[in-house]
Image (cartoon, rainbow, N blue to C red; front, side, top):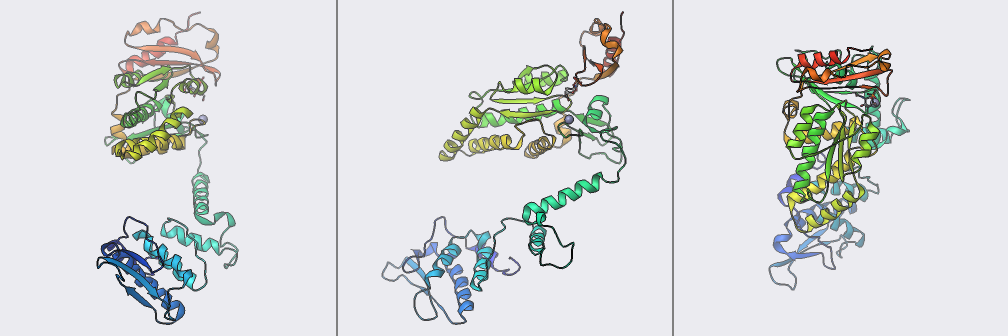
Length: 451
Ligand code: NG1
Ligand code: ZN
């Protein structure tokens, strides 16, 4: 539209419409002269359209009529010499009140209508999206059998077409099995990057690893010296909880709404210490999403992330009601930071999956917080340093045996526990210590079976 009428938007921006609704009354638009600059410009455009439509001359009267000199008015005179045709008054009002950036559109719409056509407003699109929409709107009458498909119509259809093709191109023909040497479990349990992501070439790249059904998420990257860093579910909890804490405080709701982070025994001890040091309540639950979810429901805002990347943020309905009422009040009192915080909290609630942890919605949440803080992964990673840890799995045969209960005695600062997996035929050992060597030794010692 801006190509059709290249002068319109710059002129409209130079003379923006006033902060009030203008009406085409019995004798056109009437107001203080200084409020009518934009209207004069726009009525000039409308007069041109009216003249094109009728092929005849039209007039524009600018007059104070019987009013004081400062009061002014603009009205159009139709080709017959009478008042502007009634049917055009609506168009005049639409034009006079259109915000500057919509003016070109309003003009184009009028232009289409004056030749008997009907324009459809597709809203805000990229230029290529509009081209796509035009092509798809004509798919049935267009040339060739591969022109387009009905389900690719409109903006939604554009995303459907591109996203499904993207997924197919990525997945088709690449060898490698689902989750094999890659994915969230591989990255988090073995503490190694996924196959194909290599130091040097991939330094500085921001990478997410999900699991096969996309309910686990971890971030990771190689720093400039090629050292690999993993940002697991605990780091996610730290990022999200500190953000929510700030926004709750800015909204003036930190005393009113309770918030906690729910962790399991697999949470890195440094993450727990970090949260507590920042005044964030930490609650513990048994391993497994259902236990964390259940515990998180006890708080107005419950944040839970397993170290392995499962997690989400739950908002109680009553907390949403509180936020909605504060939204109205903050807007009335024109308290901008407060209103912004309430709006952000409501949108976080909409963004983050309320049914279950969702890697894709968690990615969008992490990305938006990073953007607001102007952080990259190194700044996020630096919130705290993980204590070195080691996780090992042992065969089922050990299930019945007694594992070394005194393993923790190796290092008083360390922590170690063993439990049977609920999802695999194995037992899991988790060890954490001040150094990697000690964590490894602790995990190994726990595996020294005693009859
Ligand atoms: P088991 O196999 O019971 O440890 C694993 C994860 C749980 C949970 C479930 C469900 C670890 C140590 N354990 O359970 O946290 O995510 O799978 O997927 O990551
Ligand atoms: Zn999963």
